[in-house]
Image 1 (cartoon, one colour):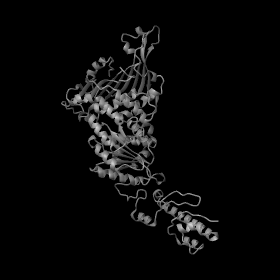
Image 2: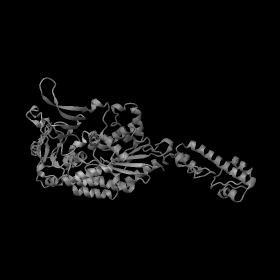
Image 3: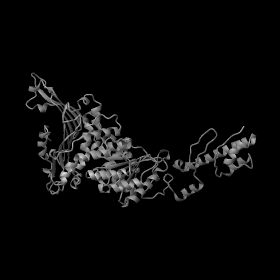
Image 4: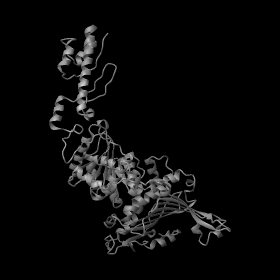
Length: 608
């Protein structure tokens, strides 16, 4: 009988262990060679004794190491024993903590999880279940900016509260300001709130979320700053696999440098990296093309998430659901039954105003991304699946089919501010704050159907609607009962997001009573009456999509180029000063030009 023991490397042990070993053989040396020699060169009682003594040594050493691990809780993941195998069994590969490492930890009080000496200003004592590193790190670049404080951090907290972020998530704030972890936590704490349906343990959840948030001063050298960020992330991740999300909430002029330095110095090799980029995506077709080329030289397309918060609204999320899960709608979704489609977005005056008068304007900020993406989702062919790439493939086909805009089919406006308005408008600046246009999609499904756009800043009220107007009933038997204007009696599907989220279907109905009198009525699904839940913010929707890898609401590079191709003629006219925006009063109904534009294309104007 012989026993074979695999390779072991046993460190020194205490005197009691040595006494037990000496009972077998005074000349026994426990090593890889002697263990293998049991089977090769030894037999009988002596070999069996040496084999069991070696097993006993291994068990005693394991017991001593287990006691040490109890003193250094989180060390059990990062400082463990090397791979060892027992006969007919396998033991998990680990690393050994030597006595010299133990004494060094005690002497310098090193945090055993991060191997970092704690400081008062920056502590990385983030512990997770089982002592493992976090599975997800999120870095908000530009963490002290208004967008990060007002939208990004509150959205991350809402996701954390709802359980959509992993419990071991770690969030880094990165900017140029000289702050500590506690400074950042205090800065964002005032912006964190719990929704009506998120009141249970709100305070505890908020405290837990803030403890997972750290700050890094990147300075003015992004190369050095991103290297520091990577080092901090690696410290807190330890040796475990972790994914990273980088939200680039920075000015457009700084975006390329930040993205380039991030790509070279801060990406992980132990998981995926995803980069979130804020709009606008370039200034025109040429700058966008150069911008995209620079990004794709550093990242893969699948890593890029070009975010537009307006696309995170529930109205947009619901478009494909309404179309492809309801038999009553999909057969009607073509030029055969639909007369025109109107997309209306009017905004109140708020912090975005300055962006318009810095040269970007409503075309680059809203029309290029939100409006054209909405049209693409409305008009696309059924994708082969709900996979993000399949949906994007269909969207880009629509965008490439949209006819280039004729300047005669476009109305531009600019709000005329008075001394009491909160907007400083330079009247010599031709940057538009109002845009109306008629678009046509040159394909078999939508040939001849006008898509009417109306979007503006500082109008009479905040309003977001999609109105799908159907043809009149051919040979309508009730024509004489519908009143003088038969256009008022056409069927219409209205998808509303603001001021109230609702789905309305306009139908013709008989008024109860004697005689025959018809009325245009609305079948009304008002969300606030039907669903007892607060609608999540659009940033929550989109950040969750990034975490899940769902990219169907984020523009791909080819979609970006196709959208710029549609708008380039208008932008060129503006740049040549060939088009002067029509002035309108803040808080009014906007320019009068769209009334004539709608009439030109046979569409009834929907008044505010």
